[in-house]
Length: 163
Image 1 (tube, rainbow, N blue to C red):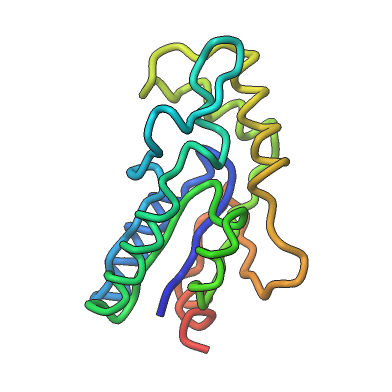
Image 2 (image 1 turned 90 degrees about the horizontal axis):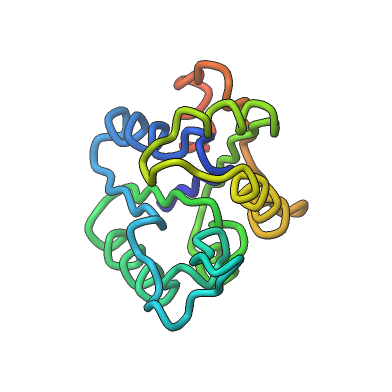
């Protein structure tokens, strides 16, 4: 079974994936962030690499890795901000989870995100806009929506996954 977790940057996708893996046991996590495209495929914004565009991912490699992981594990958890954007990847996923986070909460969490150094305000706005452009949930899919500011009910999550 392939489980997809999506949501804006800093919504807790990786944290939820790790917790789910611990609960599920035989599971592997594939994080889209770990598979950037080759540099010539990147777009730029204000002379800065645009990590917030779907072209920043090596979709072919990710899709291959997800299929490979599914052949070896009972569960594969795929997490990333552009999960819903890529139809070839979406076609592999059995269960979808979306972490809702309001813009004000996103901006507060980004204040404490120093992984890449200080992020300019304009780029934080760009991240939010990219989420709206490329990361919103599809309207026709069965998705478990979770409030990213609340603790997760793992009984509810496991029931959703196993139905």
